[in-house]
Image (cartoon, rainbow, N blue to C red; front, side, top):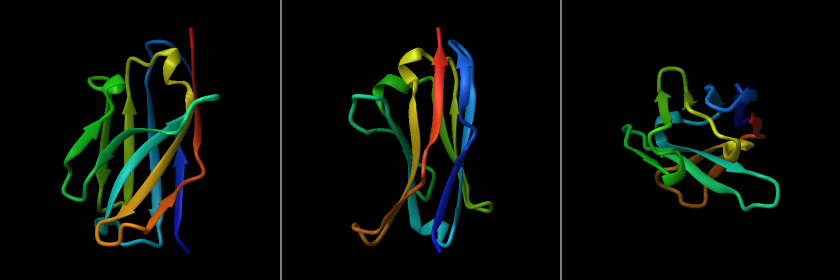
Length: 118
């Protein structure tokens, strides 16, 4: 059974930090690019960051310099370190796994809530 389980969300004050984790099982982890997405109320789900199997990363402009995506292939886990958090970062954050060879094969976690207060 394929599972992606996010953890690490919570309530923090502006300027604080959180580290999200996404533990995967049931997939060949090195065969997937990983990504973090988020969705705030009234907004579309948006891409936050991606990381390839080899460790190449990309970020949406609004989080560049503040967020860092990483992966531990030995632990089948992807992380999102979030620093200098802003109220605008408040959203449900979702983990995604996209197969390197089959475009239609992807999996989603159930999400973790991040709330940043002023």
